Every structure is written in structure tokens, then in C-alpha cells.
Image 1: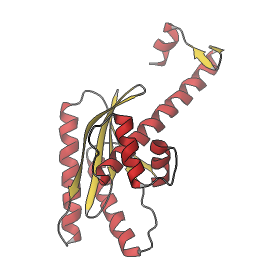
Image 2 (image 1 turned 45 degrees about the vertical axis):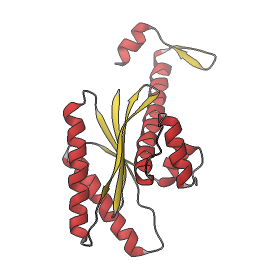
Image 3 (image 1 turned 90 degrees about the vertical axis):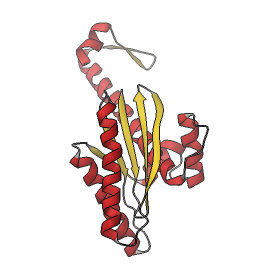
Image 4 (image 1 turned 30 degrees about the vertical axis):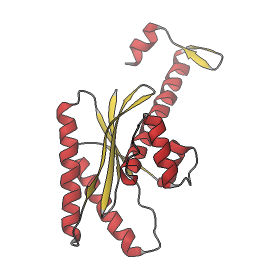
Length: 194
């Protein structure tokens, strides 16, 4: 079990989504946006940093399982000023997580859309719809919050796939049997992997 915090950075609205991963199952915990309704960039960055710190500290306090964070990488926008502001917001978000001693994984927008929708150029509305389906949500989250949830889902899928690869490598080296494309593990094998 693990808790994953996904972050969609933005200089005006930073979306976040929090899910719990138990094996293949993902459960919605929380999602929202941190709004920075001010013109001064330093104040915006402070609000992003403080908001994410407060939200994460709450979950660190009450969670028994490890917490991982994932953030969307900056894409190169046509407007260099927008890209710079987005990079600064992203930096504030990463700093907030690292200040709490959390590991931060980074994913491109294409990787996130591919993991959630199966198509790397999916529209925002498609991402919202698939997030609702994957997490069995009855209410459609705001776009930035949905993007934060999508980032968390992407990390869950990525880490789950990586764990399977590591497990398969370990089994090959231990002489485990493979039947019809699946590894057959004994209780002893499982105990040795933990």
C-alpha cells in the first residue's frame, strides 16, 4: 500500500490529486487546486509552497503507508514568459515535497495522458473522464485537480509496472517456474522477496 500525491503545477492554479494504491487498485483520497490570486510572482510561489506543504503534512500525519509524489514536467510553451512562470511554480512544488523528505518523480504530459487515456495527445476533457472512470468518481473534478489525479495515476501505473519487471528479473535468477506467461511463486519465494 502507498499514497501517491500527483501535482499539476501552474502559476495561477496548481492542481493536486491524492490516491491510495493497494496492488492494482487505486482509491481516491483527495483532490483540489491551490489558487494564487495575486499579481506578484513571489507571493504566488509562497502560496504554492505553503499549500502543498500543508496538504502533504496532513497526510503524512495520518498515513501509515509510504507517500510518493509525482509532478508533471514543464513543456516548452510558445510564450517564453509563460514557460518561465510555469517552471517557477513547478520549482516551488518540488521544493515543498523535497523539504518534507519525499521523493519526487517526474512525468511528461504525454506520459500522463498515455497512462490514463491510452493516447498521448488526449484532450483535457478526455483526461477528466478517464480519471472519473479509473477512480469511480461520481463528480467530475476541476481540470487542474483532474490533471493532478492523472499524474498520481500515471505514477501508480509506472511503479506497478516497474515492480513487476523487478519481480520477473528476480524470479528468472531463482529458477522459478513459468507457466502460460505467468510466474508461479511459492509462499517461500514471496517471503524471500519481502
